[in-house]
Length: 287
Length: 330
Image (cartoon, rainbow over all chains, first blue to last red; front, side, top):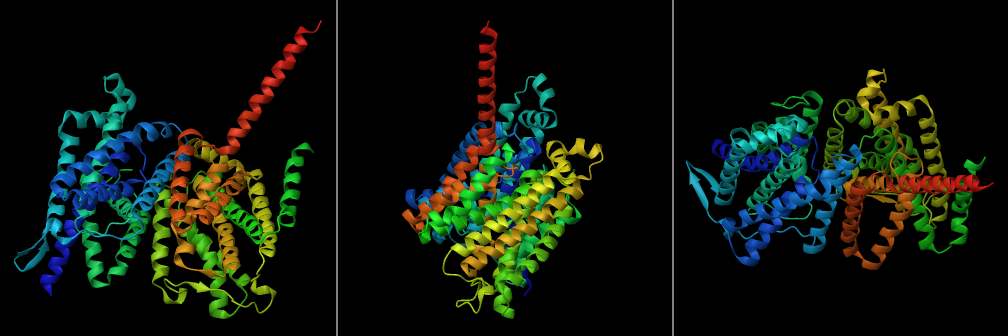
């Protein structure tokens, strides 16, 4: 009994690390430009499909799939920034929300049209095998996804706090006019932020594609997971997203195990509303 | 009197439409345009006038739809009885969701409304009393006229038209009242409005609750026409999307904006579904997505704002021509 419980918690932590990874992209964009990317979940979905194509058509593993998904999504992020975000930022809030929301629909149904609505899963042997650690069974694919996601999220945090690029981005988010006077281009920094955020979704998508179901509508569910994570962790905080992501992963796994798989999303969404009611600034965030 | 000329002409044409276009497809299309115009106009109160972009309005639509079908399925009552019940539940949900989120930034509100609508959909899908995944059905054979089950679309057409006129009347009354002035002030700058003493959170909440109640009526009417409701048709996020895009395409925050949006998009969707079948559904939403993106990028004010601007430009250029002509006169 207790080993099963530990196994459920470990599984939740590993999935939570992936949640943390793609949520940190959302929180980065919010922190820098006060804008929510409603297409964020669909970016993850695109990462999954890029990985799906790589794994099935090219027969390559995550070693190719993950970097390629990151590259494709980063490119998309830059295109979206220059093509859409830069101009809707100056517009009314309706335009900001409509812009990324329309993008979400466009991506979701373009994939629906191209690949069909079927739920797909990849064959087990992409990242095969199961480990046995102290009697706890862990799928290799989940272990790989969790560990890589954790490392990338941590790397992202270090990039933003310890490098000159990170300082420049922070400067733009604090005061873009002052940053401009110091010779930093806000446009470039914001485009880089979109590239990084989108790359994070690409990596996360390629990682969970190895064990998660793949469908055009998966982005909708993942987007809400990202909203919950980011509002629980505090907008703009990557350590917050990490803690919240792990927490949500565990809560989801435990509720699936204890109450039933159907109810796990209900529990997570209810948690979101509780956070909005009682602690809208999140666990580690400032308003 | 001239400002009433065009609305009167349009109203006469709308009343005459089902008498001029008599095939079932045309009458059904007309009724659907009016139905979507009702819910898009209801969305417009909070999304357009109050500037709070709700992406979960389908919850209220679903409340009305389930209340109407529930009244028949569980109590053998007329679906009409469900209308007030749906309004009450919708307004309560709007208050519970609105109180915490309307204090926060607008993006928060949009996120919260998405989450609420998905939460409600998931819960309803697992509640047997509400038909779970199968849904609830209305009367197959009407017992009397109050079962609101007609084979022709004509009665629905005029019922929807009357409801639409009431919805527009309420919206117009709201905009010309004190609340409308508050709403415009809040939408332009909430901080400035607050500093001048406008009770911003309360006014936004009232707008949200009013909008929720009207959307619920639209949901009940939908259920009566289709005689059936399930989690996908009554609580799917795509219905929220339709309300949002119709209002925004026509012109969010303008009285007749949602009507124009519905009159363009409903025929587009019906025709593409007829031509392409099931596969068309995906393509329709690709087009919807593209329209929303282009709208946000180039013309966030919608078609009506664009027309108003072109109209104003033509008028100024014409008046400058006459002024020039006058100066050349001896």
